Image 1 (tube, rainbow, N blue to C red):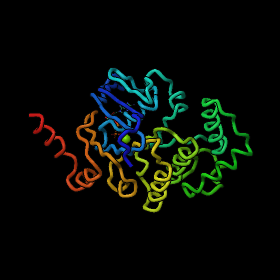
Image 2 (image 1 turned 120 degrees about the vertical axis):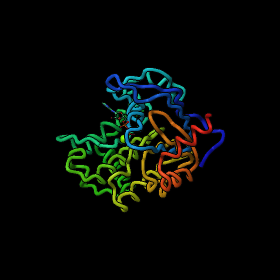
Image 3 (image 1 turned 180 degrees about the vertical axis):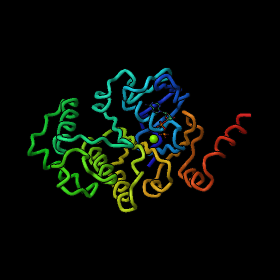
Image 4 (image 1 turned 135 degrees about the vertical axis):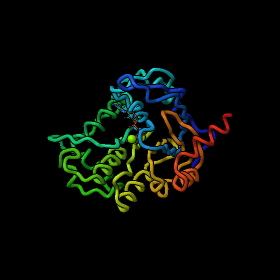
Length: 261
Ligand code: ADP
Ligand code: MG
Protein backbone atom coordinates (compact mmCIF):
# COMPACT_ATOMS: atom_id res chain seq x y z
CA UNK A 1 0.00 0.00 0.00
CA UNK A 2 3.06 2.31 0.12
CA UNK A 3 2.55 5.41 -1.94
CA UNK A 4 5.95 6.84 -2.80
CA UNK A 5 4.80 10.42 -3.13
CA UNK A 6 2.58 10.46 -0.13
CA UNK A 7 2.58 13.10 2.55
CA UNK A 8 4.52 12.74 5.76
CA UNK A 9 2.00 12.40 8.57
CA UNK A 10 4.38 12.06 11.49
CA UNK A 11 8.01 12.96 11.81
CA UNK A 12 9.81 12.30 15.08
CA UNK A 13 13.40 13.49 15.38
CA UNK A 14 15.76 12.68 18.18
CA UNK A 15 13.01 12.61 20.77
CA UNK A 16 14.11 12.36 24.39
CA UNK A 17 11.75 12.20 27.36
CA UNK A 18 11.69 11.65 31.11
CA UNK A 19 9.24 10.30 33.60
CA UNK A 20 9.79 11.24 37.24
CA UNK A 21 13.32 12.36 36.43
CA UNK A 22 14.32 9.10 34.72
CA UNK A 23 15.14 9.26 31.05
CA UNK A 24 13.03 6.76 29.11
CA UNK A 25 13.25 7.93 25.49
CA UNK A 26 16.82 8.41 24.37
CA UNK A 27 16.78 9.80 20.86
CA UNK A 28 13.89 8.25 18.96
CA UNK A 29 13.51 8.79 15.22
CA UNK A 30 10.51 7.78 13.15
CA UNK A 31 8.85 8.94 9.96
CA UNK A 32 5.35 7.81 9.00
CA UNK A 33 3.73 8.61 5.67
CA UNK A 34 0.14 8.39 4.52
CA UNK A 35 -0.92 4.89 3.56
CA UNK A 36 1.67 3.18 5.73
CA UNK A 37 1.37 0.67 8.52
CA UNK A 38 4.29 0.60 10.95
CA UNK A 39 4.90 -1.95 13.67
CA UNK A 40 7.02 -1.08 16.68
CA UNK A 41 8.26 -4.16 18.48
CA UNK A 42 10.55 -4.56 21.44
CA UNK A 43 10.72 -6.14 24.82
CA UNK A 44 8.85 -4.99 27.86
CA UNK A 45 10.25 -1.80 29.28
CA UNK A 46 11.87 -0.60 26.05
CA UNK A 47 9.70 2.54 26.04
CA UNK A 48 6.97 1.66 23.54
CA UNK A 49 4.02 2.73 25.68
CA UNK A 50 5.93 5.79 26.85
CA UNK A 51 6.36 6.83 23.24
CA UNK A 52 2.69 6.30 22.44
CA UNK A 53 1.55 8.25 25.48
CA UNK A 54 3.90 11.11 24.66
CA UNK A 55 2.39 11.33 21.18
CA UNK A 56 -1.08 11.46 22.71
CA UNK A 57 0.00 14.17 25.18
CA UNK A 58 -0.09 12.27 28.48
CA UNK A 59 0.83 14.72 31.26
CA UNK A 60 3.12 12.35 33.21
CA UNK A 61 5.89 12.51 30.63
CA UNK A 62 8.30 15.39 30.06
CA UNK A 63 9.81 15.83 26.64
CA UNK A 64 13.39 17.01 27.10
CA UNK A 65 14.55 17.25 23.50
CA UNK A 66 13.87 16.60 19.85
CA UNK A 67 10.78 17.33 17.82
CA UNK A 68 7.49 15.78 16.76
CA UNK A 69 5.83 17.15 13.66
CA UNK A 70 2.30 15.94 12.92
CA UNK A 71 0.87 17.02 9.58
CA UNK A 72 3.27 19.94 9.44
CA UNK A 73 2.42 21.13 12.95
CA UNK A 74 4.54 21.02 16.12
CA UNK A 75 2.62 18.39 18.03
CA UNK A 76 4.38 19.05 21.32
CA UNK A 77 2.79 22.49 21.57
CA UNK A 78 -0.73 21.05 21.54
CA UNK A 79 -2.78 19.93 24.52
CA UNK A 80 -3.82 16.28 24.56
CA UNK A 81 -7.38 17.20 23.61
CA UNK A 82 -6.24 19.27 20.64
CA UNK A 83 -4.07 16.42 19.45
CA UNK A 84 -7.03 14.07 19.49
CA UNK A 85 -9.19 16.57 17.65
CA UNK A 86 -6.54 17.11 15.03
CA UNK A 87 -6.48 13.42 14.22
CA UNK A 88 -4.24 11.45 16.58
CA UNK A 89 -5.85 8.44 18.14
CA UNK A 90 -4.29 6.23 20.78
CA UNK A 91 -5.79 2.87 21.65
CA UNK A 92 -4.48 2.23 25.14
CA UNK A 93 -2.66 -0.88 26.26
CA UNK A 94 -4.93 -0.77 29.32
CA UNK A 95 -8.23 0.89 28.33
CA UNK A 96 -9.78 2.73 31.26
CA UNK A 97 -13.22 2.06 32.68
CA UNK A 98 -15.54 5.01 33.19
CA UNK A 99 -18.35 3.93 35.51
CA UNK A 100 -21.55 5.95 35.17
CA UNK A 101 -20.86 7.16 31.63
CA UNK A 102 -22.61 5.21 28.94
CA UNK A 103 -20.49 4.04 26.07
CA UNK A 104 -22.92 5.65 23.63
CA UNK A 105 -22.75 9.07 25.33
CA UNK A 106 -18.99 8.86 25.56
CA UNK A 107 -18.67 8.07 21.89
CA UNK A 108 -21.09 10.82 20.91
CA UNK A 109 -19.26 13.48 22.93
CA UNK A 110 -15.92 12.41 21.47
CA UNK A 111 -17.31 12.33 17.96
CA UNK A 112 -19.08 15.67 18.22
CA UNK A 113 -16.11 17.45 19.70
CA UNK A 114 -14.11 16.35 16.70
CA UNK A 115 -16.90 17.53 14.35
CA UNK A 116 -16.92 20.88 16.08
CA UNK A 117 -13.16 21.18 15.66
CA UNK A 118 -13.65 20.55 11.95
CA UNK A 119 -16.37 23.22 11.83
CA UNK A 120 -18.99 20.59 11.04
CA UNK A 121 -22.41 20.40 12.53
CA UNK A 122 -22.76 18.13 15.56
CA UNK A 123 -24.95 15.06 15.18
CA UNK A 124 -28.04 14.78 17.34
CA UNK A 125 -28.68 11.69 19.42
CA UNK A 126 -30.82 10.10 16.74
CA UNK A 127 -28.38 10.58 13.86
CA UNK A 128 -25.47 9.57 16.00
CA UNK A 129 -27.26 6.40 16.98
CA UNK A 130 -27.60 5.50 13.30
CA UNK A 131 -23.94 6.24 12.67
CA UNK A 132 -22.61 4.25 15.57
CA UNK A 133 -24.77 1.28 14.67
CA UNK A 134 -23.32 1.34 11.17
CA UNK A 135 -19.86 1.04 12.69
CA UNK A 136 -20.57 -1.80 15.10
CA UNK A 137 -20.06 -4.33 12.38
CA UNK A 138 -16.41 -3.29 11.97
CA UNK A 139 -15.70 -4.95 15.30
CA UNK A 140 -18.67 -7.32 15.43
CA UNK A 141 -19.95 -5.66 18.57
CA UNK A 142 -23.37 -6.27 20.04
CA UNK A 143 -25.41 -3.02 20.34
CA UNK A 144 -25.97 -3.88 24.02
CA UNK A 145 -22.43 -2.66 24.70
CA UNK A 146 -23.50 0.87 23.79
CA UNK A 147 -25.77 1.26 26.79
CA UNK A 148 -23.25 -0.08 29.28
CA UNK A 149 -20.74 2.12 31.11
CA UNK A 150 -17.53 2.67 29.15
CA UNK A 151 -15.47 -0.51 29.43
CA UNK A 152 -16.93 -1.34 32.84
CA UNK A 153 -16.99 -5.09 33.22
CA UNK A 154 -15.91 -5.56 29.60
CA UNK A 155 -13.60 -8.50 29.02
CA UNK A 156 -10.10 -7.76 27.74
CA UNK A 157 -11.16 -8.53 24.19
CA UNK A 158 -14.32 -6.43 24.45
CA UNK A 159 -12.28 -3.44 25.67
CA UNK A 160 -9.93 -3.74 22.72
CA UNK A 161 -12.83 -4.01 20.32
CA UNK A 162 -14.35 -0.93 21.91
CA UNK A 163 -11.10 0.95 21.24
CA UNK A 164 -11.35 0.00 17.57
CA UNK A 165 -14.98 1.13 17.53
CA UNK A 166 -13.80 4.54 18.77
CA UNK A 167 -11.25 4.53 15.98
CA UNK A 168 -13.92 3.66 13.42
CA UNK A 169 -15.98 6.64 14.52
CA UNK A 170 -13.20 9.16 14.87
CA UNK A 171 -11.43 8.22 11.62
CA UNK A 172 -8.03 9.41 12.83
CA UNK A 173 -5.23 10.49 10.54
CA UNK A 174 -2.80 8.58 12.73
CA UNK A 175 -3.91 5.64 14.85
CA UNK A 176 -1.49 4.28 17.43
CA UNK A 177 -2.51 0.92 18.78
CA UNK A 178 -0.61 -0.07 21.90
CA UNK A 179 -0.61 -3.84 22.36
CA UNK A 180 -4.13 -4.04 21.04
CA UNK A 181 -3.45 -7.74 20.56
CA UNK A 182 -2.42 -8.56 24.12
CA UNK A 183 -4.80 -10.82 25.96
CA UNK A 184 -6.92 -11.55 22.90
CA UNK A 185 -7.92 -15.03 21.93
CA UNK A 186 -7.55 -15.88 18.28
CA UNK A 187 -11.12 -14.99 17.30
CA UNK A 188 -10.98 -11.61 19.00
CA UNK A 189 -7.56 -11.00 17.47
CA UNK A 190 -8.94 -11.64 13.99
CA UNK A 191 -11.89 -9.31 14.62
CA UNK A 192 -9.61 -6.53 15.85
CA UNK A 193 -7.16 -7.03 12.99
CA UNK A 194 -9.97 -7.08 10.48
CA UNK A 195 -11.34 -3.85 11.93
CA UNK A 196 -7.95 -2.15 11.65
CA UNK A 197 -7.51 -3.38 8.09
CA UNK A 198 -10.90 -1.97 7.15
CA UNK A 199 -9.97 1.39 8.63
CA UNK A 200 -6.51 1.71 7.10
CA UNK A 201 -6.69 3.84 3.93
CA UNK A 202 -4.16 5.50 1.60
CA UNK A 203 -4.80 8.78 3.45
CA UNK A 204 -4.15 7.70 7.02
CA UNK A 205 -1.49 5.76 8.87
CA UNK A 206 -1.33 3.16 11.61
CA UNK A 207 1.38 2.50 14.17
CA UNK A 208 0.99 -0.89 15.81
CA UNK A 209 2.89 -1.52 18.99
CA UNK A 210 3.22 -5.17 19.78
CA UNK A 211 5.68 -7.63 21.13
CA UNK A 212 4.21 -10.61 19.38
CA UNK A 213 4.52 -11.42 15.75
CA UNK A 214 1.06 -12.98 15.75
CA UNK A 215 -0.87 -9.76 15.12
CA UNK A 216 1.31 -9.11 12.08
CA UNK A 217 -0.01 -12.26 10.43
CA UNK A 218 -3.30 -10.42 10.16
CA UNK A 219 -2.23 -6.81 9.79
CA UNK A 220 0.70 -6.73 7.43
CA UNK A 221 3.06 -3.84 8.21
CA UNK A 222 5.09 -1.94 5.65
CA UNK A 223 7.83 -1.38 8.22
CA UNK A 224 8.86 -3.14 11.41
CA UNK A 225 10.94 -1.17 13.91
CA UNK A 226 12.75 -2.66 16.86
CA UNK A 227 12.78 -0.49 19.93
CA UNK A 228 15.33 -0.99 22.66
CA UNK A 229 16.29 1.23 25.55
CA UNK A 230 14.28 4.23 24.41
CA UNK A 231 15.23 4.35 20.76
CA UNK A 232 14.58 2.60 17.49
CA UNK A 233 17.53 0.36 16.98
CA UNK A 234 16.76 -1.04 13.57
CA UNK A 235 14.04 -1.04 10.91
CA UNK A 236 13.07 -3.68 8.40
CA UNK A 237 10.14 -5.02 6.44
CA UNK A 238 7.52 -7.47 7.61
CA UNK A 239 10.04 -10.31 7.55
CA UNK A 240 11.90 -8.69 10.46
CA UNK A 241 8.99 -9.59 12.72
CA UNK A 242 9.39 -13.27 11.83
CA UNK A 243 13.09 -13.07 12.50
CA UNK A 244 12.43 -11.54 15.92
CA UNK A 245 9.97 -14.30 16.67
CA UNK A 246 12.56 -16.93 15.79
CA UNK A 247 15.68 -15.32 17.25
CA UNK A 248 14.52 -13.00 20.03
CA UNK A 249 15.82 -9.46 20.45
CA UNK A 250 19.45 -9.78 21.57
CA UNK A 251 20.97 -10.28 18.14
CA UNK A 252 19.55 -6.95 16.96
CA UNK A 253 21.74 -4.98 19.34
CA UNK A 254 24.75 -7.16 18.57
CA UNK A 255 24.37 -6.62 14.83
CA UNK A 256 23.80 -2.89 15.20
CA UNK A 257 26.96 -2.68 17.33
CA UNK A 258 28.98 -4.60 14.74
CA UNK A 259 27.82 -2.25 12.00
CA UNK A 260 28.61 0.79 14.13
CA UNK A 261 32.19 -0.37 14.82
P1 ADP B 1 7.01 -0.86 27.07
O1 ADP B 1 5.68 -0.32 26.68
O2 ADP B 1 7.99 -0.97 25.95
O3 ADP B 1 6.90 -2.14 27.82
P2 ADP B 1 7.08 1.41 28.87
O4 ADP B 1 7.11 2.62 28.01
O5 ADP B 1 5.80 1.05 29.51
O6 ADP B 1 7.70 0.18 28.06
O7 ADP B 1 8.16 1.60 30.01
C1 ADP B 1 9.49 1.99 29.75
C2 ADP B 1 10.21 2.22 31.07
O8 ADP B 1 9.68 3.40 31.67
C3 ADP B 1 10.01 1.11 32.08
O9 ADP B 1 11.23 0.89 32.75
C4 ADP B 1 8.96 1.67 33.00
O10 ADP B 1 9.08 1.16 34.30
C5 ADP B 1 9.25 3.15 32.98
N1 ADP B 1 8.04 3.96 33.20
C6 ADP B 1 7.02 4.12 32.33
N2 ADP B 1 6.05 4.90 32.88
C7 ADP B 1 6.48 5.23 34.10
C8 ADP B 1 5.95 6.02 35.18
N3 ADP B 1 4.77 6.63 35.06
N4 ADP B 1 6.69 6.12 36.31
C9 ADP B 1 7.91 5.52 36.40
N5 ADP B 1 8.45 4.77 35.45
C10 ADP B 1 7.77 4.62 34.31
MG1 MG C 1 3.77 -1.13 26.82
